[in-house]
Amino acid sequence: MSTSPLPHAPEESDAGVDRVKAMRSFAEFYPFYLGEHRNRTCRRLHFVGSTLGLLCLAYALVTQTWSFLLIGLLCGYAFAWIGHFGFEKNKPASFKRPLYSFMGDWVMYKDIWVGKIRF
Image (cartoon, rainbow, N blue to C red):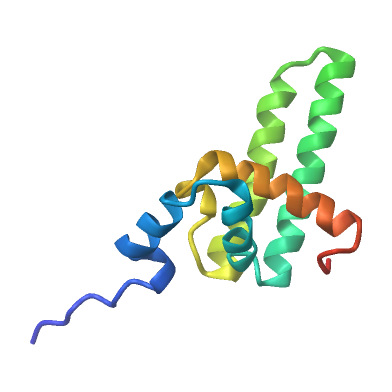
């Protein structure tokens, strides 16, 4: 008896990836980005990772210990990916639109700080 593979989730289908890649502006992409971050724990992990990344950046600039730039990137992405794979159950948007996703991280970070998005 053979089993067929499970179907792709809609956001992971080839058509879904093509739709994301066809987005021509960040304003068009950001609502999709927020849809990929519905889970509160995922958003919190993004926020923690981004905060650690900023702290590492500040430390690197003050002490000129440039290895902390890499540590900051690793912190940011590790927390985000744990949020996506462990809680959101999707692939990070950075796999689809890296630049827009990076921008989305920081806009969402700001939106959490100002209370526009629930922490």
